[in-house]
Length: 182
Ligand code: 5GP
Image (cartoon, rainbow, N blue to C red):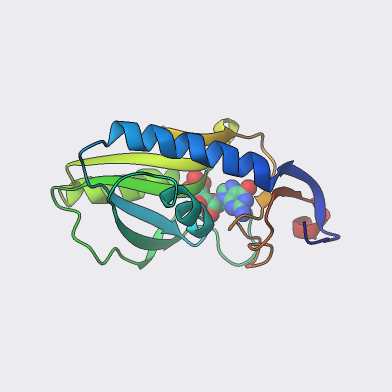
């Protein structure tokens, strides 16, 4: 791991992540046999998860990205407002969509995006999330494929940031409170 004084501890090592991502990919491969799902990665946090997951999924897929903001500017909790910064470029009408997200916290972001894709007449929308913090949930959202359940600690690395930092750490790490509460 790249040494960093703001990191409290490693929650999941790169190796643990790869093992779990392979298991999640195998579930998706089984469930979508004979289909060509549209994978909709949620930027920016899910970019590394999407890349690793899809290289393990043994299916033909279409890949697209959607970018939303709900945290912004150095916060560690959602504002409750989900702003669409970049829409999908592919049409999701009639498609089996798998939304791929880094972490489900309040659940507000994913429930909004899912609702939007169903309004656009996607045939089905399932959710693959690397992490879930069930203790922080405000709205109920079904996670169909989950990497790990985690406690209420702010994590960075493996694509996830705090104020645009730490995304390129290979492990998933807990950030020291002092790093974001000052
Ligand atoms: P929700 O709408 O579920 O509250 O928020 C989901 C989004 O919040 C995630 O996509 C992620 O960007 C951000 N988020 C929630 N918890 C964490 C965390 O512990 N670390 C990081 N880096 N982002 C988080």
